[in-house]
Length: 212
Image 1 (cartoon, one colour):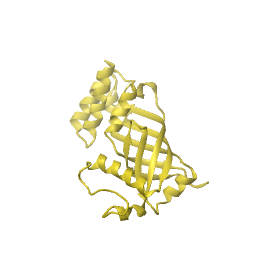
Image 2 (cartoon, rainbow, N blue to C red):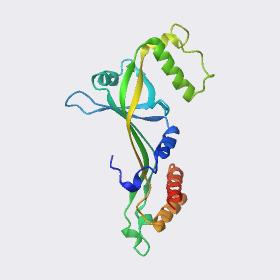
Image 3 (cartoon, one colour):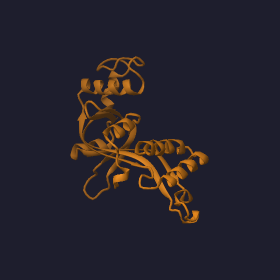
């Protein structure tokens, strides 16, 4: 992922705060020699203090075998994206039809060393952490080996603990453009009102305010 200086995070808190509000992404794993990589959509729970991600996959999933062969993986999360109309990007005094369209998005990529978790007790603890994140700690029966209903289901999954070893983050929101263009884009997004326009506009305005 190309990251120009004007698209880089202002500090670690920026990408960490954004990632803390996200828990669905795509896990990229090297495939067999000569084959394309596996890309697995996953819900996950990110633990900033431990610098790790926890998730799980069904036991028959071929991604797990690929991870065992090559445990260096990448978790990619993208959101707050929008297509930016070319007319909005035209500088003051430039014909609107000369404006160059672009894409807005926020992205965080976590490079990780993946550890497959098969011990029933460790899997139960991993699932308990995930359930606490997604549902809350008191919304489900205990997850313990040998208990109903979840204990007997542990054999059907393989846990994954992703140890984060590197982070690349990007916030592509007209960072190199003039204030005039940034304000035109913000107005255009507000007027168009497509499904993710409000989220993209919020990122744009936040970055504008931070650099003012």
